[in-house]
Length: 284
Image (cartoon, rainbow, N blue to C red; front, side, top):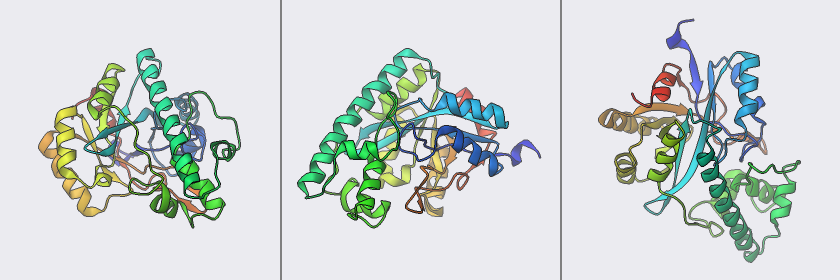
């Protein structure tokens, strides 16, 4: 098989943040689907990467160390992916720990809002739903809350839970002060990594996306994503070409909850692994 026939999924989540599978399982699934590479990009943590790297060495598949950082711009939550960061870089790890503390405060506020809506739910119950102890470098996210809401009959499925309660325009959503995309990009670069804008189509504001690309000096953009349609892909391919951005792809795999894969299955969005050289260099 020639190099240009090998593909990777550069956006997956594990139990280190709000995914359902341990990191080694994501790697096993990717290998089983014939992928040559898979990135572990958990929210505000790199805690799952050592396990994934070990599994990658065992199975003979490239594991890209990554992260997805939560930021805020233009009144919207904006996510920045970082690839090939040094996961031992102490200042970067300290930054991520601060972000997880912000996430914990938001979790408390969202649980309080849900309770005000008459919903019987506690954070302890959400954590218990993990079926294991929460590690210091792991965090609880909205999908964990959604899981409890579905199990208790307050929502029909994950998407319904987000639409009805947890999404940006829903009554239990809480916006907390966050860093800017430019801050995230600077942190990623300081840790030796390459910053890429995650799923731009989700934000519903291409003018904002253009502004973030310019101001944050992003190196790449996730053109192919489970929530992007063909028209989105065409627009962001043009944007990548105009700004000289690296083009990436990822499923944003979180695992299966109530029989539904959230957002997409591993390998549903892929990119030739030749892009990995660009991500390691930080340039197109």
